[in-house]
Image (cartoon, rainbow, N blue to C red; front, side, top):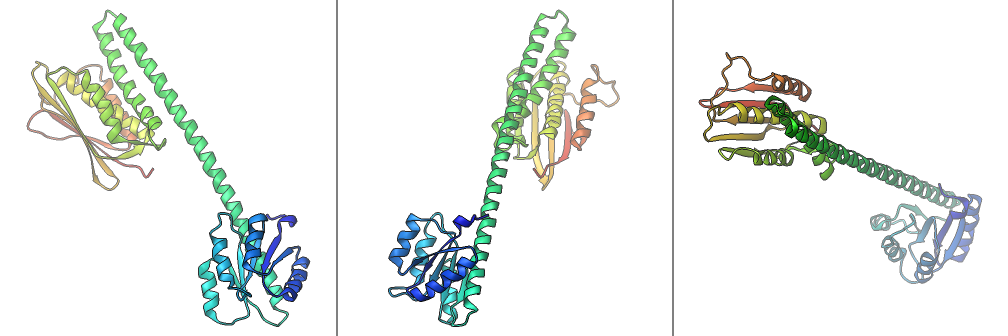
Length: 346
């Protein structure tokens, strides 16, 4: 709040007697009045000193208070302005308020004018104090949020680097193993870790550390994956701009990596050329669909699942955490898996 020393009011009026009476009234209210008789002296005082409020009389010896008001409103740091006049014309009050005056007091010969003016000044100062407090609080909240987001981005960066290191260690371990089964398991673990690391990298590089742009994330992840595919398999990606929270993006990334990996392993058992497609669409506001399809041999539901079954368990677990559904749709050739999920209001 304003301190007593800062409760200085600039009063602009060419009537020195009235200025003296107002000075006594404001002194009783704990305010100090500084008097200016014209626009020139008022501008000089505003440039050299600080005031908690300005009282402008409309009719001056030269010009009007509206001209001074325009100059005050052009300043970066401007005190509240109370406009006063002896004219009862409503057009003057409207013009003053449109020009930026904070309040308007009608100057009369009665004693009511002085307490009304003092109250108007008090209200203007209180309003300014509240606005200053709000601005400071907003600035503190903004700074705190920026610090929190910076720290969170750094956390995502460190997690992504740590996961990349784990992936590298698994790759070294796989290269040192003589067992084909171990090498395959470790290679699949690297793919799953890369999917998680990709989310944290997207958060670190993105503008919002709380949400993942699936289009960029999936495109980057699957482009890296495509580089390791045999030349006979063509992977295409078509992703719409969909945003979801980080934890749900991890679930979706792991699910996509599992489906793509399974397609590469089982869709073309005898080799040959093949096409693998990943498509992300937003069918309705808040409703997204991700489809992974191939033109391979398809999935026979009567056959016992191949491998350890870990991939299927991961799909079910990630699907539950995502809050979505996983469905195998009929197709003339190959396999078609669709994941439906809700997007976040992040």
